[in-house]
Length: 164
Image 1 (tube, one colour):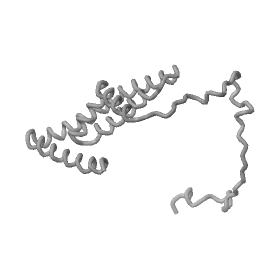
Image 2: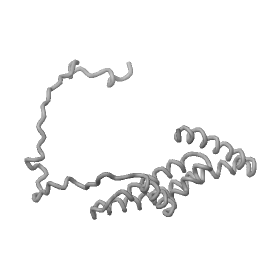
Image 3: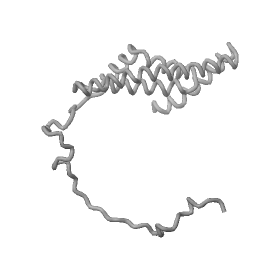
Image 4: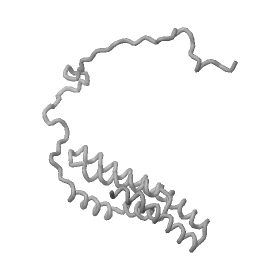
């Protein structure tokens, strides 16, 4: 139901804002603002996305809980999609998600609504002392059947023939 309301209300809000802003400042300045926010948003999302990726890699390297960097990365990705969508309402939400304090508040709200039953990093039971990537425990048994092509491989297909 919430998704239906979002798909219904967001375009209505965007159209109303386009009409209001376009009537106030004119068509070309309105379109320039839309293009400018898309370009500015792309630059901001790229830089903050790199920072979020660095934080995620750091949490993996230190074996910390990666929940927060993953959530931040998802919010930055969502803000990028919103900023590339033409409109003032989606731009406002997209720019808001680029503010770290807003992301933290959204993360805390979502964390209060989600219950984690268990969390585990790695298998926890296997530790390898050698550096051999082809150790015996990595072998996976399988069966295969060779499938022969139906056409004669010496004869070229119709796709590679030139103009006639």
